[in-house]
Length: 175
Image 1: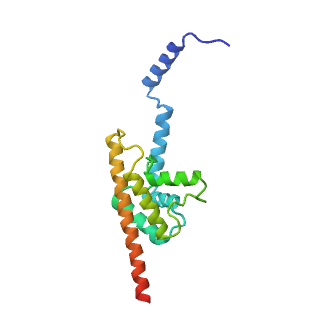
Image 2 (image 1 turned 60 degrees about the vertical axis):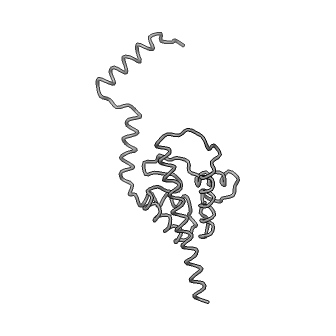
Image 3 (image 1 turned 90 degrees about the horizontal axis):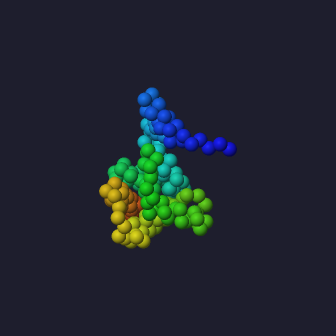
């Protein structure tokens, strides 16, 4: 096998040729295609897909509360954004751990009732407020994402508790 000793010269010549001809790199092409694909996906469809990932078996009232919270806060509990970039949220971490131990048959972190969704959200909020690494240094962007994540949990939990108290009031009126 022959090794080309002019490696640096060849790379330099290629880079100069690529720069002068305005030929995009592979990464630029992929990024452009991804951006085009993202723009074609309606926001409502994206949020429905994320919700199906979090709670495919959740009651419709829980799903409605989730979507309403996403519209209100601007983020979802799994940290997914329309452009595909995510940060690992505490609710997503719950989902990962449950899958690892085989506790979930699917990614159904919200469960099949309002009570199970409340428990999952309370646990995510507790984990958020009591991090395993409390004093780590984070960027401003990460800090802003964390503020939004906490807002999501608090707002979603309020909506779920209203659903629960509303159902109990209806049961009392029926008796």
